[in-house]
Length: 436
Image (cartoon, rainbow, N blue to C red; front, side, top):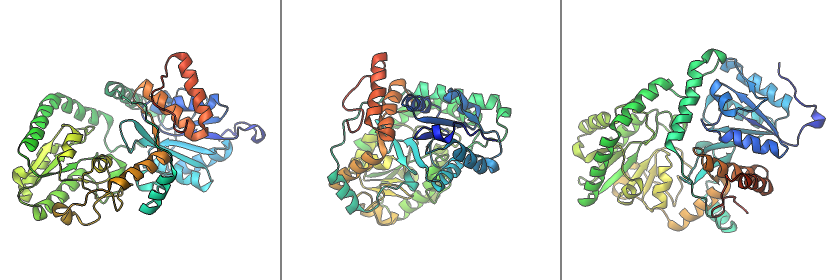
């Protein structure tokens, strides 16, 4: 039975329900900021990691089976008078159910994700992101909206911390692995057990320096010899943008599909560079798999593999970039390189990406329109991006202040920033709060 909380007559004007976030204190800090401003704040924990990273009193634990989640959540939202739902990622099974349940009740949904434009931005979008985004798809509408918007404020520079991110991830997963009986019905959203992933990561760390040297040598050779090449940046097999918003189920399928097309239709002097994702867990030997594909397609040394390298320089020298729906696509477009998207992507629009077939892309790739690229970024930033980050204390402080500005107004965000200034923890640079 779900406690009804405060009497309906004494409920706050808005009540925010938080579900799963990242292994980061960001949601905890945002929840505290909302509570200090007098808003209702609720939390449902699905595992012990959720509970540890929330760390605020009054949260509720859901220990039942996934099949009972919809009914439990419906009763909870009704009993607590939830007006706003806050979560990270809209593809997780629990979150798909939660979004549908919220929308049925007219509850506003705020989805956080990694930024469409990195590293200084994170995404906070209404209803859903990427394939579920409500951003306009008509170029003329985007141009009109951009013309009506003020210039985008200069962002506060954001520096993440990989050691901190890794430590938080280990803490989160260790709690879940150590005490699974506390949440017996919990279903992980990632395909691999954390210990399996960590084993893969250890292998990548052991090879990191050697791979970095090989990548630098490969990139240098491509530039020195003036070779015509295309880049295929890989995504993660666990990424819901692949699992939900593309025709592929794994990145090996993507490499095989693109390589076969390249072998059949690209000019004989062109090379295809397969670029490993920096957060790949190493469970699949991508180098070996790429070598096998090179032999099967007859590409041989024309199919190049890289684990590392400098992304902007690699893209700047490319004849074109092939993505599924990676944010590498936005980077390529902004740097003026022809780009084709094979899955659903917010940037797959006439004037930004190649709208013809993959076969035609190898011979006559379409370059993005710089004017429309600027208009697109302006609209996407205004509607969906907030300055900040998830993986360092300063980045979180900036992100919370900007999230507050979007959720409840600039005055609340200024109060948050002022509080941190008094504590000596928040330092303005540029214009960290949009609209100030």
